[in-house]
Length: 110
Image 1: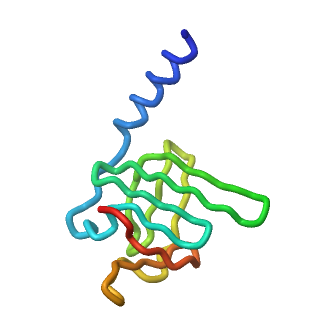
Image 2: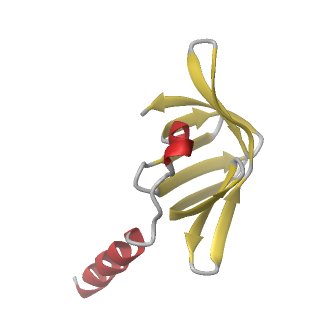
């Protein structure tokens, strides 16, 4: 119970570190899915990411720190993860698409 309370307190303090998605980047908000990858960007600045590559899986649950051009950086303190956005959100074939870290994603929820 004590460990759970400490984890909850830590999660609450980290949530306060998130920067909301800027208005000019509002198209990024939503849940995006592609082959072996899911990315969720909340308007309040929380980023959830999961990706499988063969037998390896990677996941990130961290606050948004900033955008640099089309890329976005998430993390806490000096620990950062950069998401390389080759094609920012755009309409294609009646759906919203974006290419992140070499994977074409389709927005499935807003």
